[in-house]
Amino acid sequence: MSNTITTKADFVEQFKNRTKKLALDTIRFSQSLPRTEEANKMKRQLLRSATSVEANYRAACRARSAAEFYAKISIVIEEADETLYWLELLEECGTSPKTSLASITKEATEIVSVLAKARKNTNR
Image (cartoon, rainbow, N blue to C red; front, side):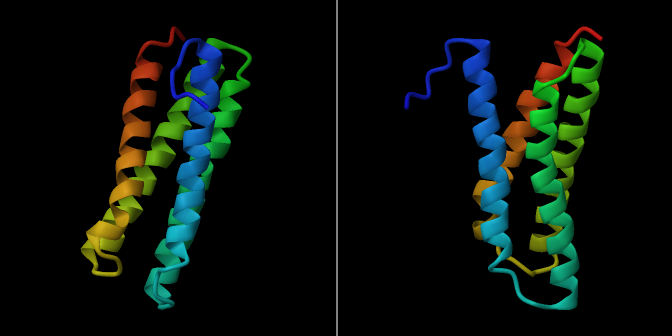
């Protein structure tokens, strides 16, 4: 499969795959976290926000209007940003080293960036 995006449909499909990969990578990462009360609370929040990115992006793709798309994409951006927050917290409290968070953090940051631009270009 080529990574070349030639149509809007190609972009949508590839971005669905990216958001799903973020969810799966986060699930796999969370399995390596220590089983402390604090880590468990952060893990639940991280998993909720990361899986919500994918679910809400898929919902945005089915939006019936530009206004609905804008609202759904806004939720995706919020959830991706929240995912970044939980990753930062896990690193800063010493629960997980920055190196094990790097790829998930990079992907969540890119998702926020791309979708913030898409939202900005959406006519409500």
